[in-house]
View 1 (cartoon, helix red, strand yellow):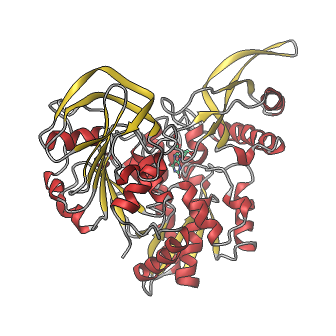
View 2: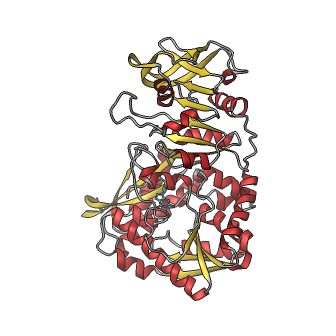
View 3: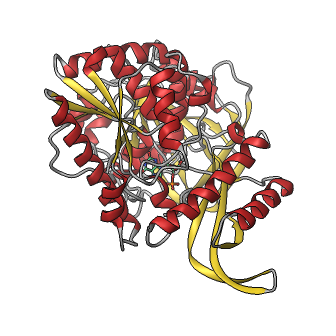
Length: 510
Ligand code: XMP
């Protein structure tokens, strides 16, 4: 049986990081909404539970609370920040708003030798971010660490309940991984045998069982997620898998033929290429609203897949490379965090669909998928491809999509790609691309006035697409990109560089 640590999400900005840190230690972890009922929690038989941080104060009327039956749980609980205050409040301690709000780096001293701080120095640097503080410990608990201003950690060792006021999951708590490791291995007594090799083996068995003797199709995008999905599915059901690569007219320049050849020649997959661009572009004509575009594209993809599946006969399954962050961001009940945009893999699917989904990567973050890809022997250049959104260039053309505007963006994007690769930056950057803006501006070329399109360039560093920093690209690379675009792409007279991070922006412009 796979061991799992559950994280109840109270809307903290670092909740996903908690999951990642735990997984990096070899223990599978899953994020659930804070209000998940006890029956669903129990069903998963967790080795321990983490209560995440959150933006609320435990005093506020609408403060989120978990199903109170978790407090009778006979296994360990770790409350982080808001989670610690929940523990304190529930067991009768007193929590009060603090006058000295602690935010940023702090030093704490660990008071007692507790398994949570075992083998760690007595003084630790940690990252704090809280307003409320615990004034009186609840019965049974003792303080096990404090900062200058406040209690920093508490424990009820007999019940194996722990609370930390700081964030062990962020890099600014240098020993955070060891603290979480102590919780996992010394307190929850986890085995830590979750590796990408074990994931791969289980995923293949899972697909074999799910598909049975039926056939499946897999939608390829040319990116690492759908490639890994295809190879896993192929290993599970062999020739009963047909991969479908749809030209929706929203791909990058030359991408359709390039990708088709790679799949056939290098990966030995059975791939059908479908040119459906006319249908997609007709449906998108005149549509400006980004969510509407996503929904149209999602629906049309499924229609094409269904029609291809019908031709093949006996096909009941559609395999696709949905990742964990797509699932979390798209489902608002996952916690108090808001729906940002419907990723076409998930939120954009039509409600009625004749194919059942096979989504072996639903539990993984992007870098974990890349590891699985290496495990499966997929060539590095495919694994290292920068992510490309399912709805393609549609989300990078702001406003209406027309064949002419598409061509402008394809040409500009081609130049960005070449220059970034030429400068040796492609694999060092999460994504680098061009966006076509919905405005025109005045320029001067030769002796004439021009009134033409504006292209924005975006390059970001990110680990999983959830947060991102803009990349300070070297000036000579920016200058080369700009010169080439205005000289080589007809209809563009201005290039701008996006210097926003996520949050508050997103990576794509939509
Ligand atoms: P945002 O724009 O939400 O993007 O900051 C985060 C990451 O997700 C990619 N993205 C998508 N990937 N289907 C995908 O497979 C989609 O619908 C989609 N939308 C955005 C985006 O390129 C970035 O890496």
